[in-house]
Length: 328
Image (cartoon, rainbow, N blue to C red; front, top):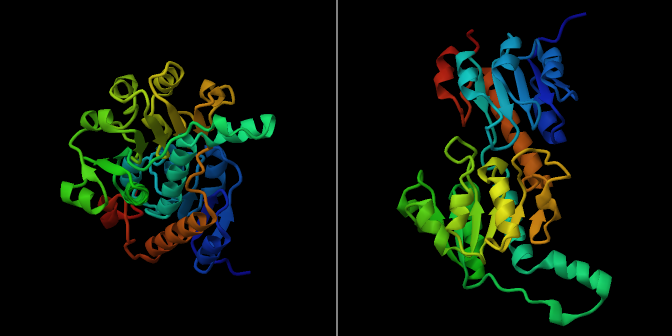
């Protein structure tokens, strides 16, 4: 019986059926349900491609153990779980799906703002337990307030557009985007985080996780904000110092927070922030809509197939690898 000559791609977890079907047109596809590195190495030992979701991390040891590996794909946008320098050293191309969930995350950030400022959860709970009482409202409006957007990229620009439509003043801080482009994206540019923080009524973060952004929102940063301000994070959990955030929320230094991401994920059910009534929580699901899940699967699958055909992908995270792709 003839062996299948097509390349082997291993999925580290299920993806949208349309993405899987796209891969299967040109490759053998195996889904690894084991979320450990050892389990994935066993399944992907002969693979030319691995598509990563959340776990395990794409480490040097994992890639090194898969001797035929040419490409790793990240299902989504963030790359903090991929050892990119190691991939380059090992001759492995890294691709992802930038922009695939931008609309979903932006909508989720807006939802967290509205639920926080309107005190939706508290009002809903009170009505269910105590009945009708309009005197409990006491919420406020976003129109006329100032929004600070940290990171005016694919997500941040959409949030800026939403906020502008509501009637908010929008300030943007992004050291990697020129001022004129920040303006085109719907925000007034601000030169530093320190200059931004005292001005905002709502702060929303849309930055990647890097050594520079880890604990960017810490005790010092929170101390520059108004006690009436609301903090929103749908980017990466370690951008916030959770201990400092908890202290601020319990001591009146911040009014409220809306969090989709956490320092350690999955966060413990014992995390004290989960007990605070002035916090709206979700479990890193802002980008996991039906539409975004399909888009991410299709986008990264297409990029992986381009690499395996010998074609340069549209977005190659580590371009230095291209001249020696697959060389160890």
